[in-house]
Image (cartoon, rainbow, N blue to C red; front, side):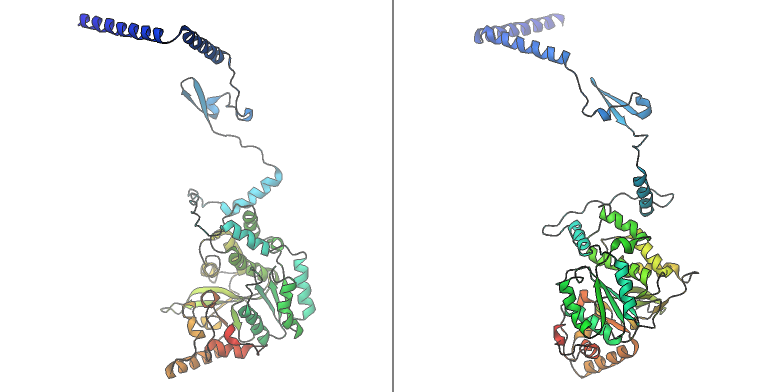
Length: 443
């Protein structure tokens, strides 16, 4: 065996000598000299080089056992650092962090939920952040908001105070929205209406309201001051997080959710009646106090199964409004339609029930404001299709006129519908108009 191994070694050496001899004959001696010089230069550079840390503020601690685990890899040493002492925070930052904690504090005994995965951006679709910025621009700060509102009410001798919100462009405020204002004043000629809107608080917006003012009706548009309106409520912290980009506005239009919140803080700070711009008012609401309307009833029990926030009438500072605002800030979800609106008021009222301190309010039946559900709203716009249908329309219209304070037209579902002659909406608009020379079919 050893003889065979020796023969193999001598054969390998012979091959190496033959290869080196071939290279020596093929390449000049200067090539080998240059290669030797390069090797010597590389060796000198590696001996005398100095390694400088990339960031002198992030040097590993002198005691690896106290600050992290030491991991050896070849000739390099890396540290897995655990930061025991966070950097100091200024007093102004500390106060803000303590307040913001209210919105993010997890339930005791349960781990905090993981952050939601990022949603893929669909081609051609506007980013929520851009929509949020636009909505915030339309809610520009109004100087002296409280003074303007209180001054308007004081100078107007109001029979009742009404609020609407319009966090959208001026161009989208159409004939149907204007008719909602018209119906309100038809039933409340001595009422006062404040439309909280930046777009309507302009020269063009005043042109829209001028016909009402020319008739002696008291209507004004005032740009919102979110800072004032949200101050000293849970909404203040929610809004700070939104402005700083620490809160996802979600896929639902932020203007819609701002309107959901604005109606609550407006009534909380001023008191009165809030009405959506797709609600036609049929009769006086001046005697309504601390009421909210049911949208649907449970067929088995007869109790309400869902409330709605399109019409709200509450005294200033009512505790239920405070609970609504708190629920909005603590459970906000901008990706679920209705979560911060109708479903919110339903959740809170179901939770507080008749607890002490929350008994001073009433839930009105669906006939008060929602005599037709959104899924059947088309029936309000259709004219008679025959004798039986005409009789049904007549009976339904009589029922609405006798029992309803208002009719919600559910613009999200009915905006593209036209008012047919002889329909329920056609009759209602004839009852409620002030400027009755317009074509109702265009509404």
